[in-house]
Structure formats: C-alpha cells, structure tokens
Length: 189
Length: 301
Image (cartoon, rainbow over all chains, first blue to last red):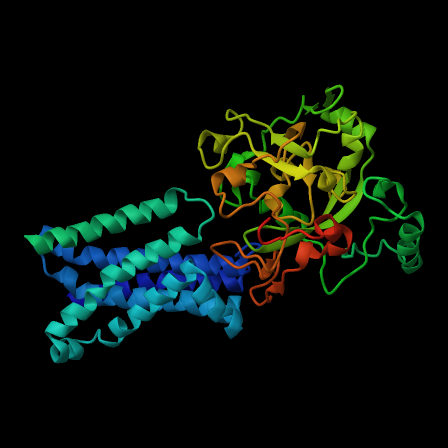
C-alpha cells in the first residue's frame, strides 16, 4: 500500500523543478530570470532539508515507522535541489568562468559555506542505498549525522547572502534550530 | 564617456559635433548645465547596451519604504500622494528656501538623460530619465563657504509607506554627497521617466540620480536638501558601516564584504544572457574620475 503512495509523493517533490522549467519556457521569470531560478532551487533545498529533518521526530511523536521510509527519498531531493542550485550558479550564472567561481568560493564566505554544504551532501547521496547501510552499519549512522552540519551551513548561507535580514530567512533559521533541538533532546533521553 | 542608444534620435553629425563643443567651452564643474546644450543628452550606442523596458524599470525596484520585495514598490505605492510636496534647501546657506515640487519642475526645464543605474546587489539598467543638473537647484541659494557636503532627506510617512513601519533601515532615508560631487553636471534631479511623469515606485515626485555611484546613493522622494559642514551618515552607512561607505563609487576592484562587484547582470536579459564586467565609475570615469584623483578608493569606499 505504502509503495503506491510513494509514487505520487515522488512526483510532488519534482513539482518545483517542473514549475521552473515551465516558467523558463513561458518566460515567466521576470527581469532577473537567473536570480529567480537560483533562489527557487535554493529555497527548495532548505525546505527539503526541513522535511527530511522532520521525519525522525514525526516517527517519535506518532509512534509510526512509515515516516522513516520517506526520509531517504526526501534526503535525496535535498541533494537534487542543492545540485540544481549549484549547477545554475556555476553553469548559467557564471557560465563556467572558473576563475570567478573559485575566487568567489575562497573569498566570499556565503559562497564558501554554500559549496561546503553541497560537498558534504555528496557522500550522503552516494551512501543512501540500503546496501550501503548494510555495508557501513555504525559508520553509516555517524556519516549521516552530517545532515545537522549541512542544515546549519545551508541557513547560514542564506543569512549571509541577503542584503537585509527579513522575516523569511529568520523563519527558516528558527524552524531548523527547533528541529535540531528535537534531535538533540531525543538523543539525550 | 558612456552614453546609451535611444532608438534613432541622435543623427551622427550632431553626435560628432558634441565632443568638439564640450572641449571648446572648457566644461568645468558646475560652470554650465549640460541640459542647455542641444542634443547633448541624446545617446550613442556603446557595446550592445540598450534601454531597459519601461515595464522592468517600473516593476523591479528597491524602495524599502514600500516593502523589501522587488515587486512591492509598484504594488504598494499606487495610492501614494505626491501633491502637495515641498522641498527645503537649508543648512549652511545664506537664506534657506522652500520650493514646491511643481515650482521646481517648472523653474528648471528637464530633458532626457539616459544613464546607467548599477545596483550594489549586482544588477544594472539603462534608464531614460527626465531631469536637470542638481547644481542648478543648489545655485538657487547662496551657499556658504563652510558647506562641504550635501545631505538629502527623503519623505517620512509610515501611514502611506508601509515599509517605514519596520526598522529595516533608519527612517527617514538619508543620503549625502560631497559638494563637488553634487555640483557635477551629471548629478541629476530626476523629474520623469521615458518622457512621462516619474512613477511613484521610482521616487516621485523628485529624486536624485548619481550615475557613477551605486543605486542606493540616488535618494528618492526627497523633501530636504541640507548643506552641511561634516560628512553625513547615510541610512545604509548606519545600517551596515562595514558594507556601505559614504562614497560608494561603482568600482569592480572594491568588492562588497560579502559579494564581488566585478560583474553585473543586465536587467531584462534572458536566462542565457551573460554577466557583464562592471566598469569603474559605472562607465562615467571620463566625467568624474578627476573628483577622486589621489584618493584611496579602497579606503574611501
């Protein structure tokens, strides 16, 4: 039964990128299209981070296991949107001008933490399969704790790039801190 | 000198004569208003830069008094009242005066000034403003020798301007220029856009435009011009002194602490449009570089 629900949920997760393609095709992105799609993919990365982090607390609250079955899929969508975000920046915004890009990474802190967050997602994506869980066992658990650091790097990336701090980044900050506190509290208990 | 193409308005022979004319009269700072020279402000093309569309100019704005999203100023300023409107010129002057916006617009005839706007965020537009040199307005009063800077103050009206109910910036919006910068012929009082009345979201009824500096230096909806002895602290300087300096000249070599200023995106481009290299003084180096000779522009950012 659950397998059949997973399929429509999978397509809902793809919706943001499908909407972006539609907007590109029908010129609905406004005067700064590159900035729009960079921001959209960035915000969805953060949203999927929040969704992924919420799975284990939801399991503890509802005492139902099925949430964990979705955690990997949502986690992979974090990597998907983070990669789209990064590739838009590198390929469309800076058009593979490596000297500008590398310069940015090492000189501008918001770009550095953004890239670091993406880089740390790579081993998580590569070891997401059931086989990897079996092979790595305890090491898998330790490795995947990186998501906590990644989520903090993600929200810091957001806070460091906005010109003025408005409600939006603060709301994400608060939600992520609450979710991290839940996990921390759960660990202590 | 960078100017921009405006359809087919400038015939070649007139453009060619323009440079000769300026050289022959030995244009000095504030000595002659550019707008008195015929066809001067009609542009010629440089690279492939063309005018930004009226739609983009009037729907993509940073005007935090009306909200921080780019669409907010258009959405929230439609009911904004720009009449009656007074501008005072005060401070280190012999006799302070108050003029209405209407008086100012009729006293100082505007003509088209096509200038590039470079936002500190890293995007730019080419805008056909209507306006006249700020020096003309300033010379309406007798300025004392003690005046070294000009401070601009924008309107404070949280009732009509929703954004001013939040301390996103220090209100009212304040900006400033050194007196020689303010007296420069291309420092403009803007009265219109695309030959029409200036829309509310672009700073109606009167705004300043300083083409060689980042866009935030160009205060909108001004109500007060004050001649002062000491360097004024602008709203952005107060908000983040490490990031926004007094001069804020467009300079690809001096990056914002958090992002680079080496390149910019031209508004209205497609998704495949490349970034362009930012030019020193936004391309107005010929006109204004001499104001800063000998100055360390990294220190005085």
